[in-house]
Image 1 (cartoon, helix red, strand yellow):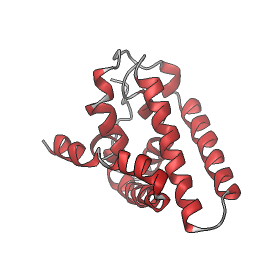
Image 2 (cartoon, one colour):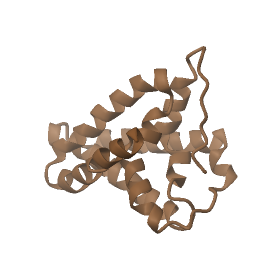
Image 3 (cartoon, rainbow, N blue to C red):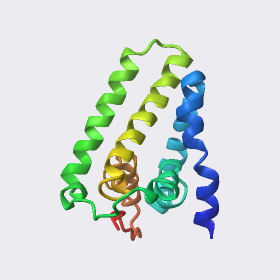
Image 4 (cartoon, rainbow, N blue to C red):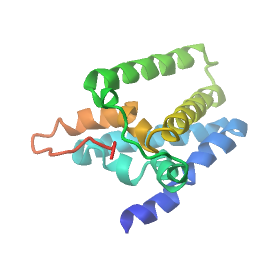
Length: 163
């Protein structure tokens, strides 16, 4: 019940950031706030954010799942090397965008909007022919949350979102 409620609320953050963020880039800072929140939460609850609060995950579950072929994601995607390669690629791209952006609030906010748009497009491209949550298997932020969650000595987590 919590998951359905939270997804029905959180799903609206994705179009707000992507669509409205194109016209008002300061909305990109919502992404930064969410990242800070889920990175702290990850220490206590690992990937709880991914399953219950992620706006993109809500979009994938509520909308893209209707068009997905719902096949299992290829096993190589869940390999740690694949996950960390995706992480390094996206973090490098993210840093490069920050370096190239004008150093004003609007340009830096737009970096978050652009990253959100790009990763959502990739999620859609992977989600239709495979499983709607395929992106979640390789999501750089999900991978980072897993790593942070594993720092707790009493952590018992599952990382498989491929269902």
